[in-house]
Image 1: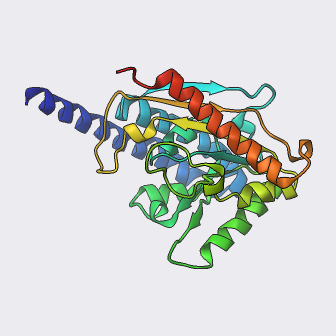
Image 2: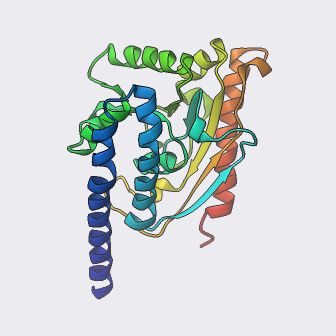
Length: 254
């Protein structure tokens, strides 16, 4: 009973600190940068966002992070193309943001979270309203527009979070954006995420001190593949392979 009390006290203090950090770190730059062009807002605000997400993961939930970046000639600070990853939980958002300055496609409900939703308007988020039949098509066109302009876009091809923590197989994903990247000769950066579903459970419980991982793989260029199906299969296979690698590294032994 005493241990549980201290655990919840620790969690309350940590989340309060995260809330204060959001107000201090994100609101002033969001206001100051709003007059800039969208791609410049995204770039500069990304620095503050990375600091905030690090606080969320390190202080808020005490996550033990394993991060591997296999790109030899390119860094996310100068991002481009399409970034894809598997999707496990809401914690994917700060884990991705700590390592990639890139605007994700997000559910409209996320962009409507009080205060948070107002802050992220500075990066002109790409939102999808599942209640609006035309919303998905509009967001798809906006993704294409940004990628053709050289702006990076992040997508979860699985569409929704994995219910069992294991990435979905190729025939269960939505490859439309990957196929568009192939058509327009836009590079795709596969990213593998692991363990975030162990922090935030389906019942809303927050667990502290969990091991999570992220592998950013080398960019994959459409020009290196004979057809679109081969390209889609390869980039998703990289995501799955990275997840399996992290599973062997980080999965509890008992």
